Amino acid sequence: MSTLPIDALSPRTSADALSIPNAHARTRLASIDALRGLVIVLMALDHVRDYFTNVSFDPLDLSQTNLALFLTRWVTHLCAPTFIFLAGVSVYLMSKKLETPALRRFLLTRGLWLIALEFTVIQFAWTFNLRYEHGLFMQVIWAIGASMIVLSLVVSWPRWLIGTCSLVLIAGHNLLDGIEPETFGQWSWVWNLVHVQGELTYAFLLYPLIPWIAVMGLGFYAGVVFDLESDTRKRVLLRVGATCLVAFVLLRAMNVYGDPHPWSGQSTVTLTLLDFLSVHKYPPSLLYLLATLGIASILLGYLEKLKGRAFEVMQTFGRVPLFVYVLHIVLAHLAAGSIALAMGFGDVLLKNLFLAAPEGWGFGLLGVYLAWLGVLIALYPACRWFGELKRRKRDWWLAYL
Image 1 (tube, helix red, strand yellow):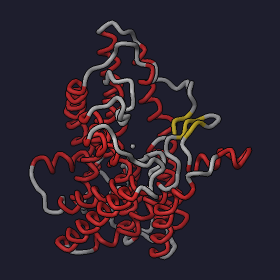
Image 2 (cartoon, one colour; image 1 turned 90 degrees about the horizontal axis):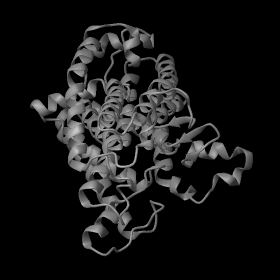
Image 3 (cartoon, helix red, strand yellow; image 1 turned 60 degrees about the vertical axis):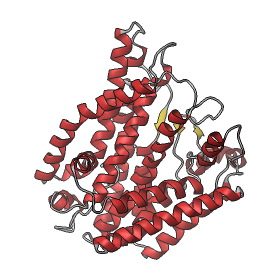
């Protein structure tokens, strides 16, 4: 689930970080906006599926899934790594325009703001209540906010050091997979926050911080690529992406390191390939990040020269991703709840979590895709309006939306 990452290329007009929106409308990288828009659209598919599906099992469960359902879920793996990586890229671009104290202040306040949104507005969007019956939900917006706070603490370090530390965490964190939270006794919650998904006393943690903080740090380190001329940048992005995918295939084939769940031969070739692709997201394994960031890098390279109506639509969504993130959850929740009520399933979907869907509720994959398209069509005019508002206005608070 800000702009989810900070919007790109915000030239400095004063030493105060609150001046960022003043130049925000004047200079942007279209490819970054388009990729961000593409992945927010894919994220909407995943969340609409949560509300509308009639499937009660994990779409990645090879014993029950089918190819279309598996790929519908798997393609949304691109979302969180791309958002967080691009956030780091955008911080690098901002660092060329802002003095370090102003940049640090903006990252800190933006990070705290995103965490506050996660636990209030976004939690309400998911549940349509603020009773907190299940505690706090620490999802992708929490991870982005916390990663910004961590980056604010180290943003004055040499860029090579941030990059090195990030690569070490991404490549090496799977060595920690065998350490259980219980090892730390009363401090077990700290290890949960850092590396293990699960229930805390008053929260459910879906996104532990390692290696997400490193993904943002890697984006900050890699931001220098966007100083290059467009054709050169495209070549670099394509080569880096291809290298990541080759590394993914080789490491996954070796089945020795990089993911806590080794693949194995299945009853069919298709299922074997799906098992090969099924990598761990919570927290994201090395192989998960090689695959997703490799694809993201290739997409970013091809988007350098892409034009046309579809590109412009993705740009529109990508300019206001936090707006899209919050509003698409509200729309999907409201639509599913209203349809369920009209069909005689009661109001449980309207007043509780989507996880509490009544028995018999939901649609097949075609229905899910139609609902997804309906949500996007409903969102688009509002996104154009809000994007234009951000382009025209110079109010400081728009930098936080």
